Length: 118
Image 1 (spheres, rainbow, N blue to C red):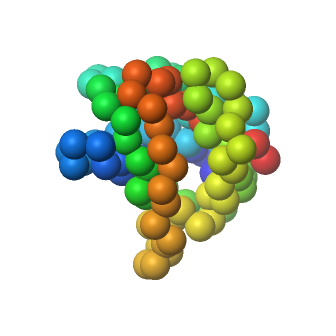
Image 2: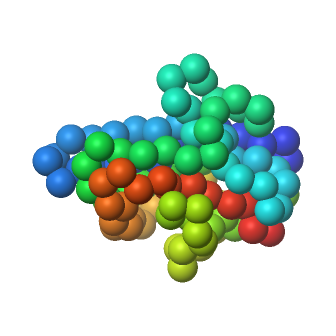
Image 3: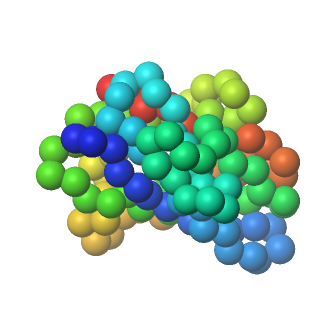
């Protein structure tokens, strides 16, 4: 993104609880996303991972629309290791009215993160 932007991961736990985690999507390829741990999130604030108290499924990732995305894709990481889950920034923007529902399962206690890839 042109200067980085905020987004939200919306997850549903095996108990039916819904979790929303704010994340900072940086504009630099190779940089880690940052997650709000209670004090806000920005390019320098937050952790590079988030955890959930139960197994969850990511249902949606909503990224605030920006004028000129610089990073076009991001890869999710689990416990510090890259996963096969690579997503397009453009398909997750708030301006996309009908995003496909996601169903990415994250085991309880796992450290979910992300890396901007291009």
